[in-house]
Image 1: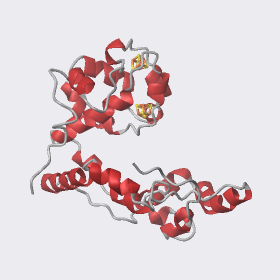
Image 2: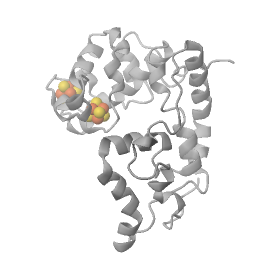
Image 3: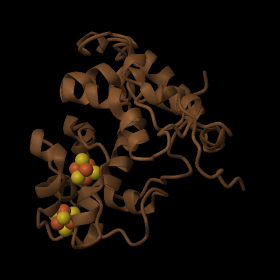
Image 4: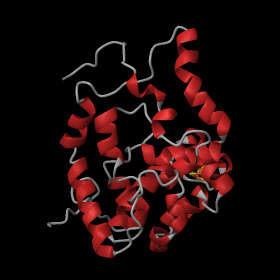
Length: 241
Ligand code: SF4
Ligand code: SF4
C-alpha cells in the first residue's frame, strides 16, 4: 500500500520546530508563539497538567529551543484539546495548536503511532452516527471513570430534556455532511495510511470494541446508555453549499 505523507501540503517543514508550527495550515498567523513570556498561565489552567506530568508551558519552551526530543515525549499525547490554555494565554499563544502539529510531526517519524489507535475509528463512527454520541469503545471507560451517577444521568437525559422542553440531542448526519467533509479533506485516506503504518510497526494493541463495557454498572450493552441513538434531530436544516 502506498503510504500517504500526511504533512506534505498542510505543514511544510521549516528550519526549526517553531518555524514549522507557524507555517502549518493548523495555526493562525496571529499565533503568539514567539511572544510567550513563560508565565505558566496555560499550565495552571490545563486539566491534563493537573492530573499528569504534561506541562504546556514547558512544551512551548522546548519548541522555542528547537528541542526535537519533545516529539518523543509521551506526555505530548495527554492534551485533549479543551483549548483552556489558548483562552488563558495573555500572548495569544495556543499550546493546543502546537500539540496538533507536534503530533503530526511525531507520527510522520513513526513516533507515537500506538496513541492513534483509539482515534482511527472516530471518523467512521461520526460519519455513521453524527457527533452527538459517545463512540462505543469509550463508553465503558467513561463509565468507569465518571461513575454510576454519569450512567444514570445518560439514561435519564432524554426524559430530562423532554421535561425542559428541549429537543433530541441527536444531530446525526442525515444529509451525510460529516462524511462529505471527511471525504473531501482526505480523512479516510489518512486514517487508512496510519492504520497500515501502525500494523507495519507492530505497535498495534488492537481495540476490542467492548473492552471496557463490563465496567458499566447494570446491563453491559452500550445501547443502555447511548440513549440519544434513536432520537431524531428536529432543528433547522443544515446549510449545504
Ligand atoms: S500562557 Fe501563553 S505566554 Fe504564558 S507560558 Fe503559556 S503559552 Fe506562554
Ligand atoms: S488544550 Fe491541551 S494543553 Fe490546552 S489546556 Fe486543554 S489539555 Fe491543556
